[in-house]
Image (tube, rainbow, N blue to C red; front, side, top):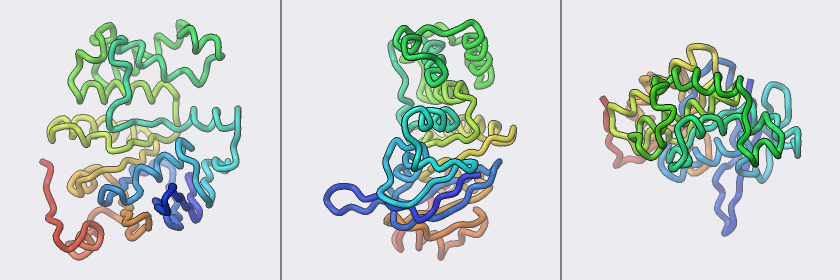
Length: 251
């Protein structure tokens, strides 16, 4: 279980990105974060794995205080939290296989990491995860030769190399067309159905309704909705996105 208690994040210039956010995420949920750009979705995700340092509050993952962890303890926690980024964050000139193998960096020594030295079992695991996302035959291809959707699937395979208990996805389909968006989200849905907790930020409510088991909405850093996707009616939609907003369906 993930527990977020009274989380606050202030940026320089008096910008409060998260304002007293509290929530619990149970094992096996597919939690979707929605809200306007700048509502705090990315900051919340990055606080969970400490890519961003909270100003105050606590984050507890399976009984361990993430916000108090330092050094080796923080490294162990980050191994258990997979992360998928909007822009894929691949090394474009490296092969697909090499990119996937970097997901094991948290498990090897510093010299092995610097030398990119991985064991035979790591290679087997990398190929298995590429098979899992339908890209086994692209293992030796350069990452920049792949489409956007394929690159994001490589990023999923890389995150799976960590053997995480929870997967964070920060706008993973924002730069993809509708058909490719569904393709990527279906892989995340399958991972979730196999038992992994997924927390995914999305722009479109229609995608949240299709894939989320639960939705949380943020507005100016505050949590303003926590419930089932079907409970977001027109009135709640306008509260989240503004009176002038029009819902766009992604089919």
